Each structure stands twice: as C-alpha cells, then as structure tokens.
Length: 188
Image (tube, rainbow, N blue to C red; front, side, top):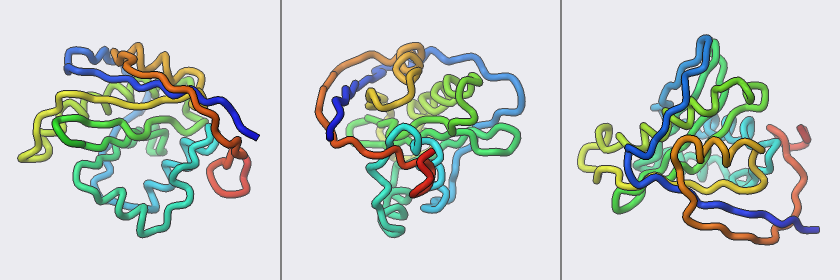
C-alpha cells in the first residue's frame, strides 16, 4: 500500500528574512551538542520523528551515525525544558554558503508549548551565523529545508511565520510504513 506525500522546499536568502518567534515562558534553553554522539543523535531522531514517520535514518549502523554527526559543518542544537531534551534542530553546512536544516522538531510531550517557534528561530539564526564558528567557511547566503505532509500539522505554518518562502513542491507516492515510535516495536 502507498500514500501520497507532498514535499515542500523552503528557503531564506537573507538573515533579514528571519522573523523570530517570542521566547517561551519557563526554563527553556537551547544548547549546541558539541561532542558528536551517535547515541544522542539517534535518541533525538527517534524521540522527535517516531510518531511522524521519520524512517530514513533508522537503518543506519552505529558507524554510519558516527559519520553523519562528525561531518564537518554538521551542528545539532538541542532545546531543553527544565533540563529535559524537548527537541532539536540539525544544521548541515553545504557548498557555496548554503546551510540546510536537515531535521527539526519537538518530542511529542513538548509540542504546543511555544518551544518549536523559538527553537526554529534560534536554529535558523545559528545557520546564518555559522561562519563565525567555523573559520574559513563561506558566510551563509541561503538557509533551506524540506518539510512534507507527513510532518506535524503546524510545521509548514511555523516555517512560513519564521520568514521562509516556498521555492518547490513535489508530490510522490511512497510505501506506507508503520509509525515506528521512538524505538522499534513501540508504535507510539
């Protein structure tokens, strides 16, 4: 059985495009995970994407996860509420001053609490100032991402409110997969 999936590609072409969200109330901090850790990266990926069918990295071996998180230009920024990981944004510096937001989202228990807009704002700002942390890197000229109809119902709205603009839309048929949950067999 297959499902129809719409994929939207969005971008910002200037730091002035970013329209930051208000900071959420309470003890919310965003911290860069500076020590590459396949275990932590996989935890974030499954905790955030398990209920919205993120499956493309589930089959990666430990060595493959390690390669992903150690690639030059990859940064993971984690939102914490009262010390608990609430979500993350993964950035990937690419050629010619482009930075892709590869993954972004919140653990289900933290959705709907104004953390997502703040995390997206903060992470996008870090994409724009990435050259300041990476000597010799070309300054960022473009921040871009993909989102799709399998993502959460507020994802597209959040991107548009932060100042991203649509530059491409594709519709494909994909095999329907069982929602994997945060670990194999959990189904939620």
